Image (cartoon, rainbow, N blue to C red; front, side):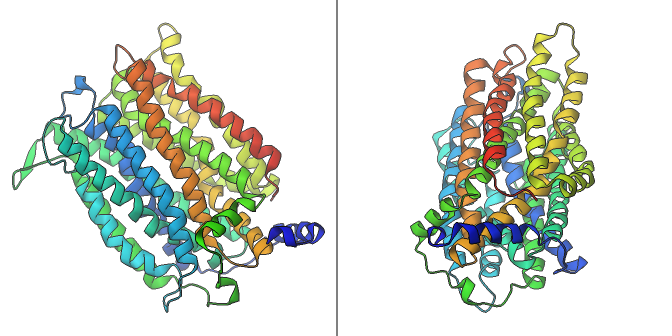
Length: 464
């Protein structure tokens, strides 16, 4: 345990850990295949986060089918993240203690993927028209199932990264590839879904009596991508041989407790959870901001998210270069301050007389985008450093439990975003005439992110 080690020795081990920069553990092909796993990891959840609220509870002015009230839909999505938060550490503990010929991670990915893909499709098929209790119950069931199946697959996938390469620079480069995969996923989920939604609104189609829409078509496509990518990854990426460091003896509750004893984990998780809360509030209000404030169609809403992701992707090389020069901690801190400063600017669209909301909206998404690159590139290397330090404290490799503990906190942050944003819209409005519930999301998110950034800058121990 951490308290049983000499603090001077731990400090020396921490210093040595930060000096492990150069090295190559993976071929180019292995990097691409592993990084591609982040495509379905991001695509499945981005479809739900970006569109499920808007699909079930669109603004009345759009004259689209309404299946649930906006707050009910928000509560059910929050429930999905609560289940996800509970499931993450359970899966992490389970995976860390698994022994099989395939290793500790790959069996979960192999057997969970099919069910995850199935639920992803079913969630877009409400059983009745109109706002009904049946829709609420069925959607709740699907979202709870998704909430557990998602960590069953994605937690072990992410747990592989610190194991397959110990080198800091290679981790950053691998994480950048994962970031590009996530951008592609979010381009598909945000941009292509927006275009598909607009197309099927204009061109109504039915198959076997079921009314098709862009959301259903995208969900089927995402399900096929999920199955294909993870099957290839399980086939081609191998785990390191089982050894004594993988013989984790802790029970589940002790295993979680040991994570929170790691002094580097708390500041890491605080800043990540705050960014997730802030960014998901921004993503969630984008369809409302686009259609109700800017006055554009769903396909243009998708273009806003494409701008956000595309600009972030363009900043990847700069993020890697800056992190190499000044370290991951300073780079991440600067990015979070940038994000916190820019997100409140959305309210200016109503405070500055004569401003063109369309032009201003596009400019805002360009300005907000660059710090997103720091999260996409540096989040996985940051937690890999935290996990490596845990080995110094406990003597064991517990990658999945760290992904589980991370998921426990961050999914609660996601859940909170599905409560805060709908509540703001419920009380302050989400229409063209009453848009303040949309616009106030930015300032609320910024305050929380500023506090978290200050704490991270003060307490996170690693510099490189």
